[in-house]
Image (cartoon, rainbow, N blue to C red):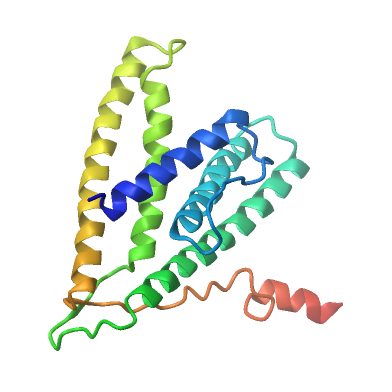
Length: 205
């Protein structure tokens, strides 16, 4: 039986490969998954991460026009909010799935929710993809490729450990050993009523 993380990793790899067909941050997400399916949610989550990964690359160009850099920075801010929203949506999916499970009296609370662990797995899939490219880049030196190959080995070991931890967390939730409890991130910097800079600006208008 395919584990949750094996399924998620495969979807992440597909999303990353699909993005790199055009390798353009303006490419719209395109898939054939059913609405509200876990597959669609995971694919779109990784697509957001993949686009943001490349926006982060673009903004670090030392020759980028300052006006364009500001546009990219605001786009990254917006992407971060979408990423958070998607993580919370994934947690809502887990909450619905396990709503009928009663935690045991001695059930523990994990330091992070399943969705935030999945968020880390999605980013890790991007690290593995790009480090593998560097480990085999013909235009790079042999020393560079060797260093990247060593880093890739560490990332793959991290994938194994993180996948095991996520699967164990899900197993523990299913068996009532861990409470499924979610807190919203309540980010303040994008909220016009909570960010002093934003609400002072509106006050002056």
